[in-house]
Image 1 (cartoon, rainbow, N blue to C red):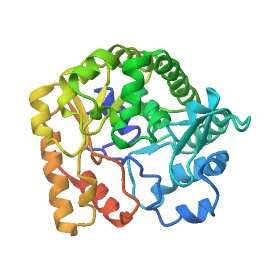
Image 2 (cartoon, helix red, strand yellow; image 1 turned 135 degrees about the vertical axis):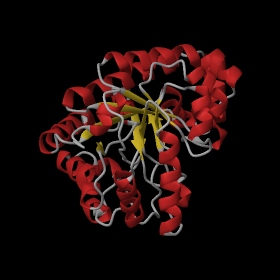
Image 3 (tube, rainbow, N blue to C red; image 1 turned 180 degrees about the vertical axis):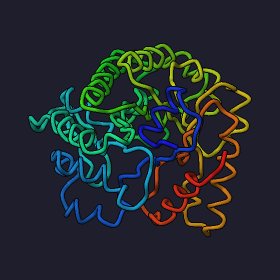
Image 4 (tube, one colour; image 1 turned 30 degrees about the vertical axis):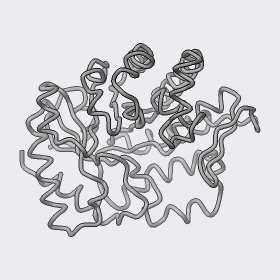
Length: 323
């Protein structure tokens, strides 16, 4: 089977085949990552287009995934809105720009290099969802998201709309620079209730996904711990829904019979024995084949402690699986 742009073709409903990539596949678990970083703070690290290119392509030295995910960060839109970012000793977003550096330009240059070098692979750009991005301003992306929820409930959504529009521009930049698809990480939206989502987030979330779709490339929507919101989230105009590990794909199929799905191995099983991982991979593939399309992935990102050999084993199992 021809493997050129396989993930893209599955998302566009042009192909029913097996394919795999992994959220956070270009990350700290890879043997050469730290040597490339050489002690640089994260923002210094992603200033360099050559670094963006090298880290994005690094996973392919160890396992032959069907997609390249761009090495960047979902919080970069804050740099266009006069906020300071810091990743040392925890993530911090504060008012007041500390430097005048165009991270978008560096990302664009690095992405163009990747698209020229590996035109055979689906190139996936990444953006944060509006609530998830906002949560890093108010709560550092953690602690129950109390301040984020209070701000949206009491101050209205003007800041949410401003951030949303800048995230859309961030997605547009990546597509212009060579991304074949966009994955939306609204990872933390599952921390709100169904009633809260409907009252404070639903209109903006629908607007956001629709505008990203209008850029003209397929969209993957990922959120964690959000099964209680699926009746709402399935109304979003996403081409692919990435499911976390808490719900079997067979259960999700009862909610959306005609969906293209992505996922959904538990990332915290990556330390188990090889036979267990092979059997778990095949179990998920068995469920995935019942959908209109399935892209194998984890139910969240690869953790820093993972052994890359386990990812290679899973990838090989996906590619050798007979539908």
